[in-house]
Length: 115
Image (cartoon, rainbow, N blue to C red; front, top):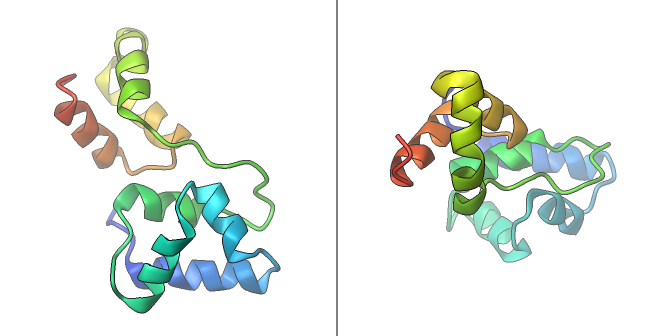
């Protein structure tokens, strides 16, 4: 899965706002600061892969903020999940739960010294 582009993210935001969702609500659901969305729109910044993935996972029916995979959560979940599911299973489960590409979860596990 290729990393989402800024254009894809902005097009999705436009679709959500056309469906009646406010940009403030989108930011809340994606756990991002509204100023970041403005920077994406102005071409000043590109969203990080995990941020872009969370934005693209939002639908007009989304009611609760999407979870953010923190380093602490990864450290807490990883040992048990890999014991039960194996490495690939844990990566896949975390990728699905946090709306992230599997390679991002794997890279974070490497950065955290878990792999």
